[in-house]
Amino acid sequence: MTLGRIALVFTILSLLGFGGGNAIIPQMHADVVDQFHWITSAEFTRFFALGKLAPGPTTTMAALVGYAVSGLTGAIVATVAIFVPAAIVVYAAGHAWGKLRGNPWRERFARAIKPVVLGLLWAGVVTLARGATDAPITIGIAVVATIVMLRTEWNQAILVLAAGAFGAFVLR
Amino acid sequence: MGLALAFGRVSATAFGGGQMPAIRREVVRRNGWLDDDAFLEVLALAQLLPGSNPSNVAVLVGSRVGGMPGAAVAFFATVLPGFAILMVLGAFALDSHWPWVGGALRGCAAMAVGLTLANTIELTMKRINVVDIAIVAAVAIVVLVLHASLALTLAIFIPVALVLTRPKKDAA
Image 1 (cartoon, one colour):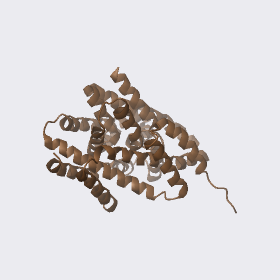
Image 2: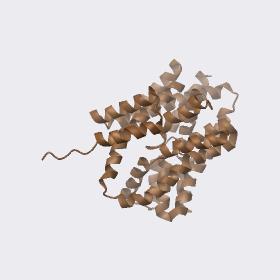
Image 3: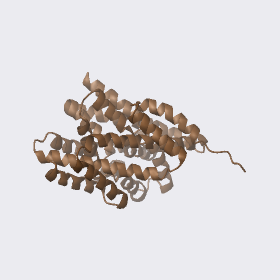
Image 4: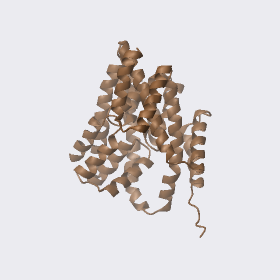
């Protein structure tokens, strides 16, 4: 049952999604591209880009995966599954957290998880690049984007739109 | 009601990943629900727990302002507008038969890789020390080369990182 599988895959990603949306990119790719073949690697990166382009959390890209598999119902199931389980955990933890104030383990966990999440982010960048930088022009766009982002404060959405306009002429 | 407006406004308009500053402006400056210290505390907890950061902040702020109903309202206001806009974008971009739309998407995807790479480089520059870099590299290699699952990676590396980053006893 495909809808059940969508719900299961994204619920697990939701509960393991420490460190925000991008740290789950490698596992989401492994699930939806490599294991279940719902979408291709190139589509995965395009969905990610649309997720960045739209307002709201980038994680909403899960909706596009669900849509590609089973239309609007799939999109809704994927969105509920990726957001709601974590939200319940956060709601419960928000109440417990106050009691942990001053507990040294709280600081230690916060310290320890940072490099782990950062390693996942690097794996995510490589995962995305495999699907997106497939030609000299797309590699060039990615390199220019990296330099511009490191050197300026320009708005990300404007950069993505500019690359889209460029791609519409050059990459069709 | 105020919660729905505040978080809904951010979700519908914060294109390009500028959500956290926009949320802070709504929560701290516009509505005065939290002061800056309390907001930073909420943000730290949101980043620590599973789930996307904007929806986690919404749950935590909503529950402080209005209990369980407040958390639910802020959560849905964060997810729904972004979801609706992304679905419209996606339906247009992914079902299109015009070649320029495919080109635009390839351009956007390459740009998104660059943005994510730049962001990851900046985060890494803050953690240049032997222990952190070793953990970052080990996690990335285990995920990319050995294809370890997210669950396994977290189960191995969070305890390892807790040990390696434990506070040193004062020599004096």
